[in-house]
Length: 325
Image 1 (cartoon, rainbow, N blue to C red):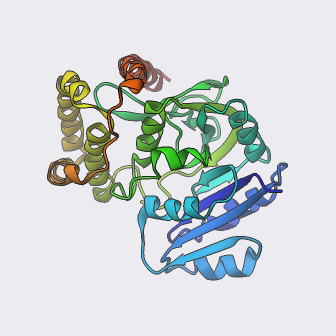
Image 2: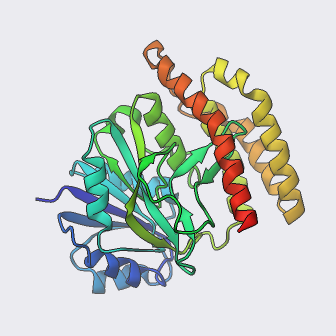
Image 3: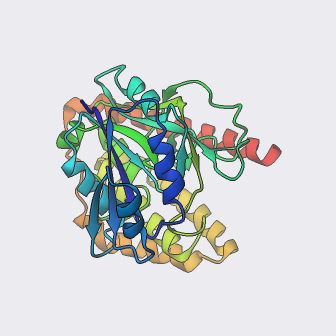
């Protein structure tokens, strides 16, 4: 009996699919099924999958529904207690699925478990050891660019990176699925934050190893599309997940964070895209699905606020390590 559904969103990812699917086929834990959601690819991805992966479930969309639209389709189809979201530009180690299942089965209060993501083109460096968020309104990949000798212990994180993580399926019925308004970027932090408000945990499991190319679909770390959507979605997550009082308390550090980001993007030529994202967020944020405030969640809000402050120091330490390495 299968316990896990692996969901892979794909858009013109043919060059990545052979290694991605081959690595899944080599898993030591085999009680899982695979669903690929194709977002209207034009690069023969669908034909390759039909010919080479007859045992998977293939969903063919006529248009690009974004990461959120694709994974929500997969979640709606899922009949197993757990689901794994996996980017197409990954190659998972043989024990990947088994390690994630073991980690999430440790407690019913665990919503998600993030994997140990290593840079595909440089196996000496980490790509992600769980995602964090700080009081400046900055989301960041813990450990990115640092030595693989670091972050070898499991522990709590703010949210799991949906590029390679396992989720408890039933919790989506309680907190909602990925917000389609995001389309892509920060949607995983948003859903992880919602889970935290409801009292669930997000964990990191170093035994679940995956090699990640990074920006396989968008094409680069920074581009016009990505900068604009990330700026917009960053406003969305604060508006949706912070009650009015918490937003007021954090207004000054968030504005400082935006000013520093604007300065950074000005230097690398993306300032207008960043400003366009903020403007779109201002015009559309009231259309977002906000988390209703409940007094029974007050303790969770306070713990989250403390973590936002603490994560500023984690970000600073990670930044200095990268600069000094």
